[in-house]
Image 1 (cartoon, rainbow, N blue to C red):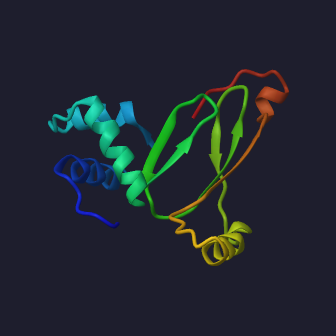
Image 2: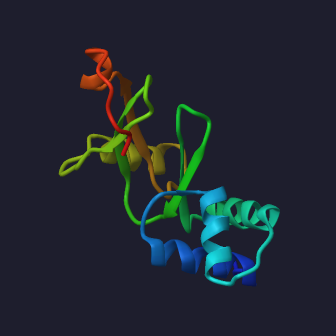
Length: 135
């Protein structure tokens, strides 16, 4: 992280670390309220944006338009169903994108905080027209 965090940014970051999962800004706002930490929703959004630009957190945009946030700790890879919205993390032992990251750091002089790799399609239940519960 490059700059000093504000109190609200620090509060948001601490909660993201504690939760240790992807979460939307609205859900994060609710979790803050449950923890008796009163930050307005606009403040939560501003804190998330600043933390993202600082490289402290990751943001992943879902096909529904919702953004999920998590502490920037590792690269994320998912398969996501376009019909039901199910998003399943892929365990990556050897990510093919790391080599490209190294090339971009050198050739484009670009500082990369993290990357996401997402595949879109239809899950088995949606392919078969079967009902299923979303995770």
